[in-house]
Length: 314
Image: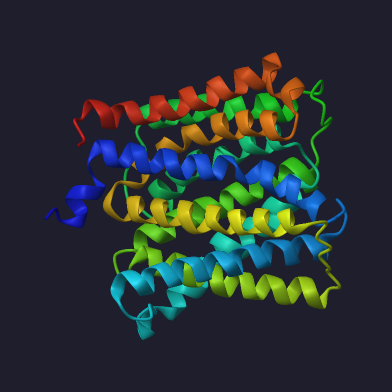
């Protein structure tokens, strides 16, 4: 039987798992926008957005904990000494990231949000090199980052886009969400050496979702589902988080941060395509500036990773 490290570092497994995670994440933006409609949440109804997000992650946390409990044949809990790690991760991966993410998507398009969210890949590399000291930032990674950021700036600065000018509570919030996600990715790499990353993800979702539910409810948030399909969508959104973050956390545990974060180049591509299909944003998705942004972001990520490929990583 293969050791976990041998299995999760195989190129075919890494690519397949990364694509599955990116597909799930790519569907998140259109699902959130659709969810606002199905639960009748207005763009300026912040408490209800927080409540909506909290319920999603509360369910996602139970999904992961339930799965891990079945897999280990006992109720899965972090080690007593690792609860502080869960709480720190919760602040970045769930509360910080998604307070900004849900705010941003209420004030920008799914297409634009998907592209801006890809900036987290480059934030992750810089934080890995200068803050967490996991690896060195090479000239190739710097070049790739500059090209990728140019792509992000294309979509942010495009005044002809249907969503109009740059907004701090829209595009600005999406950038803040990407930065929180980058901190979380590096924390998973560090904390995953002390605790099963799937258990870490499950419990930080569960606790973070609980905190967000309380904040949203006490602030006056309400959900008004229009039909049973509203709850089906919410269950799928919970699965997005449970499945994608569990896969990504395991990949980060057994691989270099840059090797895995680079594969996030699929996120903006899938996010744009899925937003165009489900949100009828094709007019924005297929403008010259949007297509150029997707190409530059993807190219920047691939250039940053080409050094790893040449080095003969498995």
